[in-house]
Image (cartoon, rainbow, N blue to C red; front, side, top):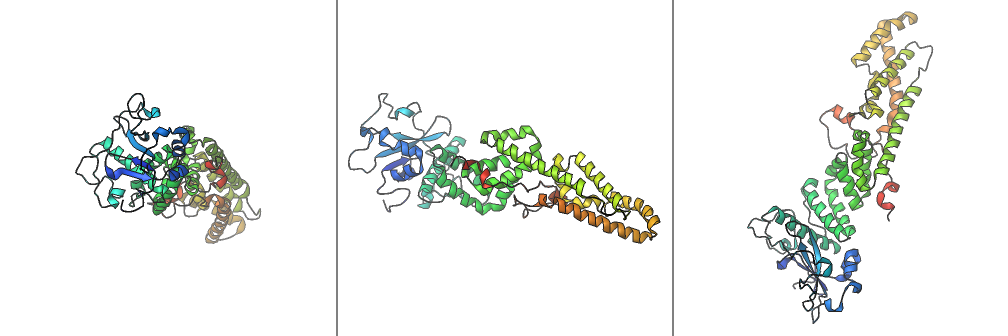
Length: 422
């Protein structure tokens, strides 16, 4: 060997063959594998090893593994090989626990096309060799499994996986395959840290996905044990208008967080209703001497009640948050309905106050602005961006921006589901 480094260490005692090609043979250390993986810790344990299985002679290799695929699909797993001097009774040459697997079907790819993932760098490409791309869908999937295994073992030696640098969408399929492979051998933590670091390159895309593709991002955050990603995704999910659909919530039962979601959503709806109750109670006519205060407050309450009955606000209809973000518009003097209200009230105000029409209008507009500020102050806590990350994405128009769900739901470290299992 030219150098004592990944993927082949001169002092390694575990050989892992990922395909028939020599470039896919790794020589690693049993103590490193056992340190990061409970699968290898058990598999390499003397408790499960017959002395006859250890490779004899001058070779430093004590254990050999081979990546095997089930016939006709891409489900592959490493199988420990027995010593050439020992064969199980069936003569299959496969460890007893895996003897029912078919004979190894390696992804010995045979196409002249260049590499499948141009942004994915393997040990072959690092050494200057061109790796051939698979010719069939099954071969392509197996090829990705081989790459995932190689990158997984590289992460155990603190080598970052070579994921696409172009976008989160491009990186996602390889991330899913890599995490599934790591989970198979119970060694997710080392690769998860590398993946999370890589995702920071696409922060805007990740933030957008957290606010739209809730299931995917919450599932990913739980696999990575990424607190910031889980908090953002959950915060947006809880405040989503889709949460009023109980069937939609059942999707999250498989993640074991349905109880957390229901509790957080109930608290969120309660917060909205408490805020609306405050609007009815605290936006009050402040002066019995000012004739215009009573009709303005009455007008505000009637419009607020109508909007809630239409599904805005705590009704959680699509675009429900517009009620809170546009609270001042309920009595905005530029709205046609409000203008009609002012025109009807001015004669009633003019008569007892003996003021001109222009002066009466100005007074009404000042009082309308005052009560708008009172209402906006009450709803302000709902407008805090605790699940921030959307502000820089851009919207086609103003109404799209104000109609987006609220992000005031706070998810704390105590809510992280993996904390209970730590």
